[in-house]
Image (tube, rainbow, N blue to C red; front, side, top):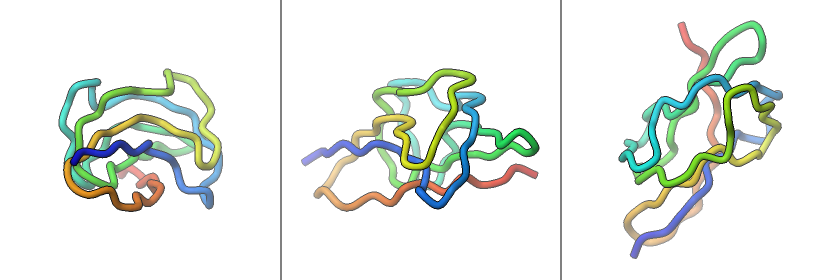
Length: 93
């Protein structure tokens, strides 16, 4: 049975600015695949999908400020519903 989760940035993370969507609505994302790019003003970061699924909605636009636990996107997964951890952005380079 499919279930939905909202991709969020972990509460322990600082504020970021949303830079770019790397995956379009309607695309399948793999576990660990980078779905968007954020910046802290000095460096850029990718946000990995914590679980495979179909990206069905984006909640943010370019330039939006992302605070801890803000929802970035909605992803539909197959299988039994499980707890999905918030994402920790990964520094580029």
